[in-house]
Length: 320
Ligand SMILES: Nc1ncnc2c1ncn2[C@@H]1O[C@H](COP(=O)(O)OP(=O)(O)O)[C@@H](O)[C@H]1O
Ligand SMILES: N[C@@H](CCOP(=O)(O)O)C(=O)O
Image (tube, rainbow, N blue to C red; front, side):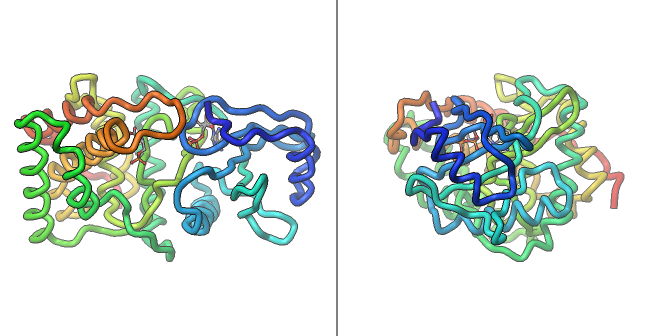
């Protein structure tokens, strides 16, 4: 469930009067989601989504609002938050920080079609093109510093071989990135899995859940996408989805030589990032709520495949 704070109609009807968004006609708790309370809110004028922030760093919410405002201004398919009559987006409801969003159309893809992969690659390429000029700053909370600091906590739960693998991997990333050319920077989604997108057929209705959003290496975002969207259940890369995403992306933003060089390492590092974050959820810091955790072993397999076979060749860029 993802209604941790129950709300009734009168609370939400009253809340809506702060906005020019019409009158409440229907309120429905959203069962999916893991961290925040989400309601679908229908008014006589709009389909909306109300989010109450239950956990996390509330002081970082203004960064997420600024990023969504910025991307929405560039007409990217993201839910730009509604601003109230005074121009303020970030609200308080039931003593929790709250945001109201447009409800975007579509469903999360399970087995993405090539059309969906192209649409996603295109949107991410467009997003990264403009996000390079975004002026906000939030260091990537899951970067190499985090991997290096946190991996000790899970070693005790791993086989001897996996302990060695995890430690050696982090050493390799540190050696590589200490010497590598700097990578292009910008604002990232930070967790662009299939279940953070909505599609109607091959049309991308929107990208949601920007709460891992941050600033850092753009390539980190692209590698997360490839590992989730273009891996099979054994962690092997699926060539057609891989090519569809990367061709569409590069038609919007060409990878630099430094990024092409770092690509196999970035695929490994982002695989380990999720192997580790999922292990932490399972063994170290289980959520207070009764939710089934994501499977860490899938990202162990993805890492194993990237190590054994590297990355597939990057398609030649076609854009600017
Ligand atoms: N703007 C939106 N438009 C349509 N559906 C949304 C929107 N925001 C959230 N949702 C729905 O609510 C669910 C939970 O939202 P999400 O932000 O992923 O929650 P959590 O942070 O708790 O994981 C999503 O899986 C999606 O189905
Ligand atoms: N999409 C992730 C969950 C979010 O990652 P986290 O580091 O914020 O826990 C997954 O599938 O594991």
